[in-house]
Amino acid sequence: THQYDVWNAPAGALYFYGSDSAPYHVGIALGNGTMVHAATYGIGVTVQDISGYLPSYYVVPGQ
Image (cartoon, rainbow, N blue to C red):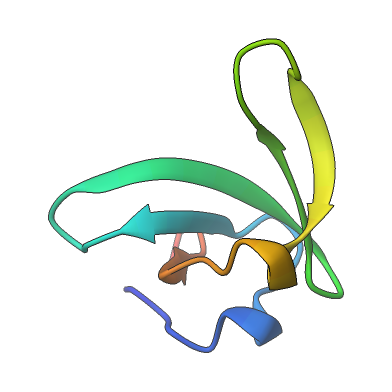
């Protein structure tokens, strides 16, 4: 089930960017408004605050 209150995503939730039917990027929530994701080519995997790049929604795997 898609959840749209991205600030309350629990650690381990998957943040998605884009529409429900065509997401273009995903990150893993770490809690407290942070996530780990592969940023862009040359930068690699990084931890980032979601306030600079707000996800569209999140999903909790297994729910």
